[in-house]
Length: 296
Image (cartoon, rainbow, N blue to C red; front, top):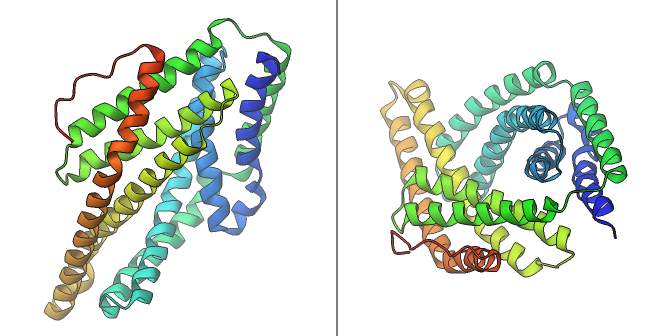
């Protein structure tokens, strides 16, 4: 396969993921919204290595970032309400506390979904998809420079280095903000590694599975952290002056915090495998991993 064709196919694959379920977004389909948002992230990751004109890449990147952010407002509430339903079914938590939180978030979800149509019309998404389709057509007719593969390798190496730095900064202590940075860096590294493997025609299934497992653990931890923050925001509104309700919500927060710490320990167990992949990528590029400032 020619480099021009491979480069265009990398974009086309991610564009098809983006457009596949667009028709279901106006119907409020949770799965369609999630997959479209993930696809927008993958498109953002590949744009910088397609060798487009700078202003075009910047413009498309901003539009895709807008899509990610707007869908993210709804996605967060979808996830939190699904998580509350799961917690209720588990029988481990106070039903009244969960019901109070769920009612508050359901009301917010309705408002956010109603605003989505005006903030992100489906027509805007289709226009963006057509623009990206045209970019793909142009790529097939234009031979990439010799620096194309170098740009792909440089990007995945930079993503690996950023993830290592985030892991070092997080260390082994449970710190919410630093773990959030690790989660984001891990996600970006995984998407960049997908592009690198496909560009080279190399299967990286094992490495990608390892990264996905680590990402899933941190994703679950993040969802619980967001839920804890939401409960604390809601608590003064829904519980006062009901002391019993306040205590039930307090107990819910404490239980969720314990779950977060268990997930953190689980990620620490997986972390060496994630770190090994980063270091291998950097060695392959000739970039030696920086000396760790914090022991893992």
